[in-house]
Amino acid sequence: MINHSESLAEKFIRKGFWLYLFSFLVGPLGYVVKIILSHDLSVEEIGLLYGILSFVWLLAVYHDLGLTESLNYFLPKSIVKKDWTQFKSLVAFSLIAQLITSGLIGVVLFFSSWFLAEHYFHAKEARDVIQIFCLFFLGMNLLSMCTTIFQVGQNTKLQKGTEFLRMIFVVLFTLWLHFTGTGNLITYAWTWIGWVIVGILFGSFFLYRSYYLPYLKDADVIYDKDLIKQVIPYALWVVLAANVGTILGQIDMQLIIYLLGTRDAGYYTNYLSIIWIPFIIITPIIGFIFPVISELHSKWAEDKITTIKTLFYKYFSVLGIITGMFMFVFGPISAHVLFGEKFLMSGVIVQYSAFFLVLNFLLTINFQILAWVGRIKERVKILGIGLIFNIWLNILFIHLYGVVWSALAVGLSWIPIWYLSDRATRMYSNGFDFMFFSKNLLLTVIIGVCLWYFVTPLFIWTSRIYWCILIGCIAIVIILPFIILNLHEGRMFIEELKKIKKVH
Image (cartoon, rainbow, N blue to C red; front, side):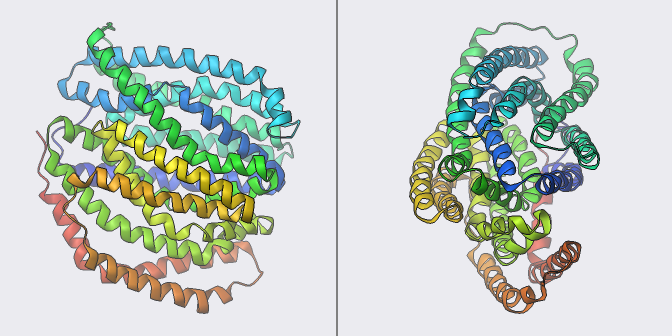
């Protein structure tokens, strides 16, 4: 499964190619779907659809009992030992428990849909959408099992390829609904069930061919009492961490839809789509780095984990400030380009959290390290503190200033989360290059001021396609000064990767 003959540099560069290839294909496809939905549905309907989806994600914390992330931690150890019986037993035990739990959640959600529609979402049509998403729970377990095995096996081609095939179906189905004039709140809700089914079909086929036949076919499923005793406590802490983390990610949407209504929720969900754009770039590489960290940790190669964190902290901090500047300057323009003039407010909301993006980039690195080295309890405590801070600020800001300040509340809550998670992972750091960060910060400020005063006036109320092309050209042009400024450091980064020897 894992090619142990590859150096870390080979892993990052060769497998990173597949990550970014499929990510750059999948990312735009997701925005095609959101653009079509924003055109065909009203702001209120968009708010209701994604508000229900957010609510479902809150419940989805319990659909796998924390076993999926537990597999991310335990399966690499089985792969290193080539213990396929243990590997298969863990997967079987996890899948059975997940199907039982998700089935119970789906049933409860189905029979409470009328109550939630009337008393929580305050919209009768919400009942049908909630009932459709009840099927989501069962499907997600099967799909997540496939992608988890691909991830721990570091097979980025199958992991992201399955996602790409799934998104192709979603786009085709959405386009069909759009051009046939049958797209509405209910039919578009079914697209989520469709992509789960398609993902399961392709994922299961790839799993059977590439993993079951060569590795797991002849392995037995056994009940290893000692192993289960290790998995269950870890999984319980994962559930707590996931519960806190998911609430932290979704609480703002739920407070907005309950306190302000579906219209503001519609603005907010498209704000989330805009702010997520840079994560199309960073999420794939972070998603791949940390199974490698689990492999290193299992071999006691802590010095290499330190090298990885130090390098990525250095470069992702600069990427974060550049991205935040660009989001602040072009937030409203991006909202108009993507979703139309009726969602201009979504871009204004972007400006309230843009400068906090750098903290999100860095805390993501910290939390992944904590997860993959097994320090799940610390994640729970840190996220719990952030959750309390976030809820308090959200309630205060939403009540006083409305939807735009909810984004500010989330951004401010990233400060204590980043600080505490950085302290918890400080043993994996060789320090921070403040000189490198400072010179890039100065260049960012200069470019940002120039864009704000001299470039944004060029955007007049003309074609959205023209605006899109202009933003793309500007993004390419402003990257050039940073490449020139950091050319020497870029070469050093490649050399550092090459110095990381093969892990035996």
